[in-house]
Image (cartoon, rainbow, N blue to C red; front, side):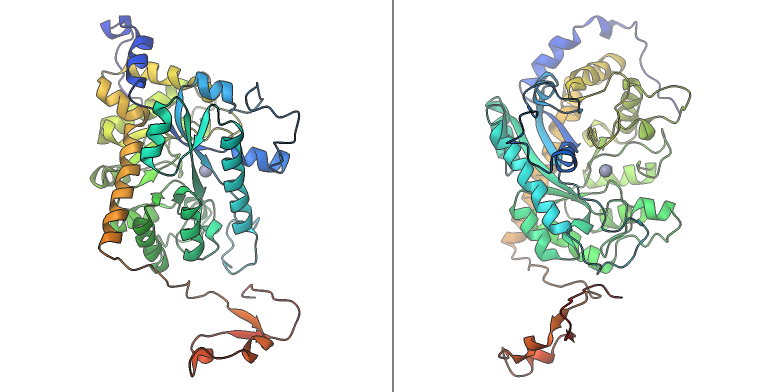
Length: 421
Ligand SMILES: [Zn+2]
């Protein structure tokens, strides 16, 4: 369905869009909630960028992201994704006890983002909260923060989730393209697995995220997970990189019934620029106009208060025509200005105010819950395999009977294989 956009000959077009953008950008940062550049550093450079003479972030790179383009694109706040793959090449796997290196690898990605911000500190600043992000922006720097793309990256453990938050992660996507002990992914449902939504442990996890102030990101999750999470959360959610299903029917996009719930929840859907998510027309390449259409569709259905930008740059092979890299956000915003009747206030919401609101409200919910002494969610995943060497039983008991309170497996072997098989 094409959105009814204003006639390009209308009077609005004569207004200088650049001037309008310049005046709005004084107050409102352009925020992108999903950029995968750190994954390129991992795969191609093993994160060894500081000693690499061929790598100059402040020069021209072949990737969608480099510093000159971030500056040209007037990016004010960048959420870098600390993405690590699902732990099995078969995305339908269900053995969540399978040994893996997701936690180490995620911490390495957190490390590389912080180092990147530090090395290029003339233009970027790593920030810990929404207030610091605005301060950094107003002092002329790009605020850098992080998201983790899938709860498989906490490897079943809420203790890991808490420490990711302590290390500066500000949103966690409930799944990537694989199920985990917390939730069902959109891709596994498309592959034929049942949509179980959020599990009871997933509900506990969302509660813990609210208590911590970690934004619940619903990109990549199944339809039922979206609905369950929206019902559970006490704070506004984010879709860090998803577009509108009614415009482009793809399971990674957000259906209208969910969009309406996002409106009730006060959340934000940040539009993904991936050509396959914004256009179904195989005859013609996706363009910046397709991205605009998704933005307008969401704004029209649930209001400008609930739409933002989540490019997925460097996590996709290429951007749409006219929106090829991080230097193009001003073109996108000016096009939205020219084809819609959005007010300055509404354009500011799209640029970044909605994401700032969601971020701030998550912080406020967390401080309220902590003030109310909401207890830490201490529980572990019920099917976790706890395996130890037999000699572990030779150590002192904490109190009489404490050794037998929990179900453990004790092994002789030198091989501590934690998988359930
Ligand atoms: Zn993604």
